[in-house]
Amino acid sequence: MKVEIDDAKCVAAGQCAAGRPAHAGVARGDPGVGAGVSRRGHSPDRVVNRVVIAGASAGGLATAEALRRLGYAGVITLVGAESRLPYDRPPLSKQILSGQWTPDRLALRSQAEIDALNLDLRLGVAATGVDVTGRTVALADGDHLPYEGLVVATGVRPRRMRGSDGIAGVHTLRTLEDAVALKARLRPGRRLVIVGAGFVGAEVAAVAQSLGVEVTMLEAAPVPLGRSSARRSAGSWRASTSTTGSHCVPESQSPASAMRQVRCRVWSSPTGPSSRRTTC
Image 1: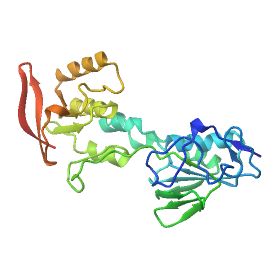
Image 2: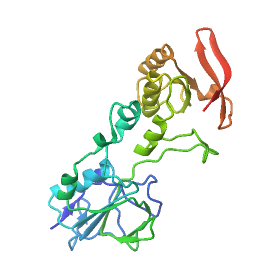
Image 3: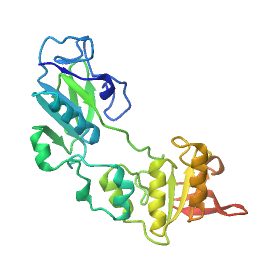
Image 4: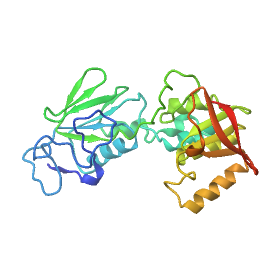
């Protein structure tokens, strides 16, 4: 049996740490692209016995399901840094943060549906690197998984600000644990500074403001949502948030700041910006 994987659906793993951006395609160590797994136009000469999928979120789970749907009966090893079964991440910045949902609603599939896929689950351990020549994936616990087909579906990691490690009150948002920790700090009368006014930042700002938190957003672009929305729509969003207690500050108007105390120019009145210290 041959399993064919479309280049658009997979990501190659080069000699780099798992989780970093890589190029499109199937990981390969020779022109055969991996035994039994072919790119279009290649004819492999033997069957794949194991496909390793690094990343146990929506993309990794969808890849495993697609392989089974295509009739692949070999071993599928699904590797994930989190100990939880695959769950939906978009609600983290909305329903979970606001308290509308409990974590049990995030599951992408039931335990029975996961069991039906007959996966070799390696949860709670991160994939840390790839040896393309030796065709192995290194795990954080020291194990090495041999593979004949490899899909990297680790997604992206939030960028941490320099000097922020170990400082209480500085959060990133990617996992359920991140959302729960941030939610615990959103209380009426508190102040929240959000670095980045993209979709996630905008969603967190909206939820925080609805909980009575004073929000200041720092953004490198001239307007929020500028990379993903029309400029006119982004400007309308900024105008609407300014009337409900959220302030969006272009990065060019924010001097260099320390982590515990951020000096920023806050558009807090119709007459213009006021400069003050805002506690993170």
